[in-house]
Amino acid sequence: MNTKNIRLSVLDQSPVRKGVTAEQAVKETIELAKYTDQLGYTRFWVSEHHNTGSLAGSTPEVLMAYLASQTTNIRIGSGGVMMPNHSALKVAENFRMLEALAPGRIDLGMGRAPGTDRLTASVLNPSNQFREQDFIEQLYDLRNFFHDTGELGTPVGRIRAIPQVQTVPDMWLLSSSGQSGLFAAHFGMGLSFAHFINPFGGPEAVKLYRERFEPSEDMAVQQANVAIFVFCSEDEEKIRRHQALMDYRFNQFEKGAGLSPVNYDDIKDVEYSQGELDRINYNRARVITGTPTEIKLKLNWLAEDYKVDEIIAVTITESFEDRLESYRLLAEQFGLGK
Image (cartoon, rainbow, N blue to C red; front, side, top):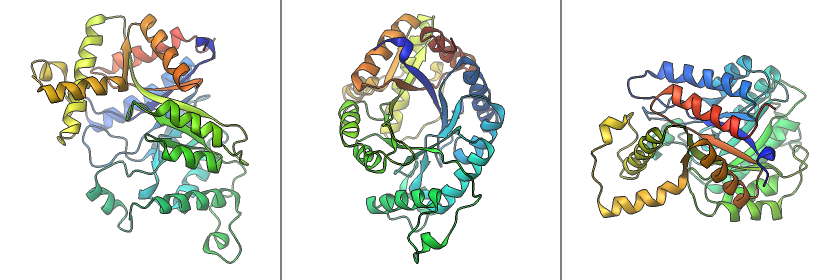
């Protein structure tokens, strides 16, 4: 696949770096959105996480409204709205309002996980039963709310999501297992595979999505992309430190210790058991690091493997300057903005 045909996008989780406040983390997300807009990135998605001190992104809809006001060309979206935490009507009204603010520039990315632990999820939505059928019904209701097509006599048919705007956001389903890919195909929505969560099975899930895709009123042609942790630098030592930090974060998360802001100096002397080393080796497939030339080759291979023309980069670094620089180098290598 030719690099000039690959589009680059951003998924940002508002990471709270060590020594930085949550307020500063959100400000960094805003600055990154403005910067990647100037660089020529295709879309900028923000996440929904709860009950974690290391990520400040909890309300993508609120943040998106501000990001849309601060940018010009880049699409602003959710990566994603965690549907079990919300009613379909409230999601429809949030995103109709966003369309009123930035018509034709909004993406509604949706996930069927809660984006947190079960206890927090139960407090966010006490009626949540974590049933797959509930998610499917939400997707039906959401489509009807966006188009005012609810069946007469039913609650959805009697309610209108306001504001009554003329445009509809592009709808995407996020998947790390492949199941949501089948839902995306059925509903005629885009598919974003979270390789940064699950590094195996993605190409097969995207292939199955393409084979089963049914065009919809909102998306006539299938759309798919892949999201992955990426770090690009011209400094080999920074690349090595970054990989070590990612190894540590994955290990802590899998041990149930949560994610706490750390620097390289905090973890450089950590020793791992053989079992932990095996998991580190597995998790390294979730990350692509390297110099600009190396990154270009690796991301091309990834795009070819998935047969997609868009890659969403997720980048968490020790310093904000390194985060900006990584996205700049990526844009330069792939000729964005030219």
